[in-house]
Image (cartoon, rainbow, N blue to C red):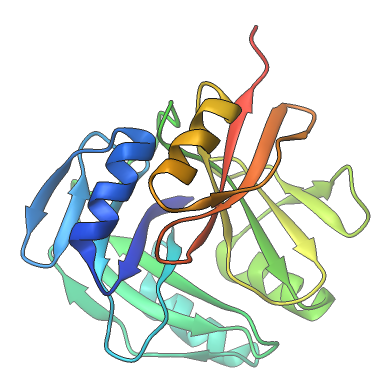
Length: 227
């Protein structure tokens, strides 16, 4: 499952203002980390490392991070040594095909097995990978089960929450989708806060739009068909 996401920026205060204006997020701050109140799955904003580009990224849950790190290396990838924090153990992994992901073994009490994925929450993601070898790497490491999607080279991940997809094209950052009640209204808020928002695009579940925040970080917004 996708355990949490983090937004890494040089100016967390500015990012907090942006995302509060767009999604209504409020925060509980602990040093340089600003947890999004009520976010499900969990998320936060943190000060990025020096000389790194602003970015947003998810961390995927694993049961045994030492085992996952060893398996990543055995399958031709690279992996840093796990690091410990209050919320658990984390490791950065690269698939050997230009792709990267973060692994997380939650400490007791930190795993959210049933994320709400409501308005303002992360509710969908797409993981781009370079080729079939990279696809196999992700399947082996994360236990993903795939079914064919609606687009060529696209797949649905059927055993994950929030729902997600995998697209075989080229390596790149995970595309994270945040749910909004109205695409056009949310796009207006993004532009007013200093970001950019593309036109709404229809999809099977509703509609979506590609956006960037005022640090230049790419993300997407989506709304679902009313039932």
